Length: 285
Ligand code: PRT
Ligand code: ZN
Image (cartoon, rainbow, N blue to C red; front, side):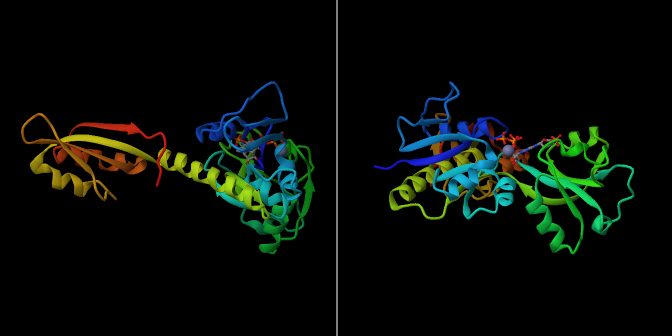
């Protein structure tokens, strides 16, 4: 049977999380020793470790079948490949920034001005869509120093905490793109490879779903159960088990993690006791 080839970033911000994600999907493979290619011992997949910028091209050329990159790298590459799943990690944004002392009043500031970036394709689309005519200075790294050395009037770069901009005397003025890690794939996978990708996607979604939900257990007097069930959102059929204590039951259900904190006080007021919230490892739907 053929193997699906996945390209991961060799070393950088996406590397560790990409590897952990595959491990959480139960895919075992030797990692380390600086190997550029490795095979899983329990899943029909081969892993290639590459620079993130090369991944879209390799996928388009069938050197790899799928890969994990930032949405920013995918869009900048303009390769004929598709996003098959957003992965929810390494969130960041591509923003335009100017020296903080500039009295910035809007994008038209950039007409006939220079913007330094490593993302010329995304930036030129953005400027064209907004009818702005600027010169794009393409540089591959340390973009944030460009205004200070007189190379450009502003920059367009990835921001996450904002501290790099701050420490270089810049302020963020426009948000061009919100990005996160994505799983990308060649658009013409053969049947066998598509089956393996579907299996992988099923596992990825189960892991993701599990992270977004918690298993909740609580005890309550039987006459309070109905009220408690109404408080728990989206619950279709909770499990209710009698406790040894006369007239009391234990209620078990799955609840979205972010909703839990909104309703905890209501649950207690309604008579819930001994509330336990437990992490779910996998959630198969
Ligand atoms: O060597 P290789 O080419 O593989 O890696 P790389 O150096 O090109 O990429 P890497 O590892 O830095 O980032 C990989 C991906 O992580 C990016 O394509 C983004 O999708 C995502 N990501 C998330 C980030 C950041 N956060 C981030 N903060 N990529 C870069 N940065 C840089 C940014 O360029 C700027 O210099 O961090 C600085 C800003 O960070 P803050 O926190 O100071 O705002
Ligand atoms: Zn890169």
